[in-house]
Length: 231
Image (cartoon, rainbow, N blue to C red; front, side, top):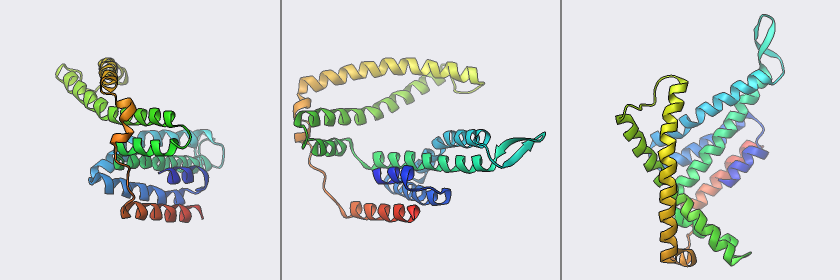
């Protein structure tokens, strides 16, 4: 994931070449999620941000006029090309991160962080590993809580529809109980961590991750894709 993200930021300079890592991370996500709809949902979530980037660059970046109104440039050819490139870069980074999170369990991520940082500081490694483990485990809880609040608000007549002001009010009615629930759950989680002594013995209860053939194939394909797109 890190290799693909860094390459999209540093070495890949062409929109057509950016399609190769995008296809790779989409295939990776589809392979991990086992559901094409899950990958499609990730791409759909990227679309509003991608569209905003394309429009912003097409309007603000100077260059040869592609669309003119009353003799004044509205959309430039260079701006549109830059917008498409930056939108593809954003899609590559977000889908790569989503694929990495879908492929990695919180326990494996915590143990991996610990194994990397323990060479510098054993105490810091334990703290960061605990933070990673709790953070990654907390995301599904918040997602389930948001889904529950949405269903409750829907039955109360708070369907996410209407104009922009109406949607903003409904979103606010969701966020307040979500924030209260997050604070409550985080307090309970902190108590459980302290009472069970998880802070000190977390990494010792997690089996070190092992390298599999699929990992080697994935890294080899990633290197090949990045090398081709960067050429």
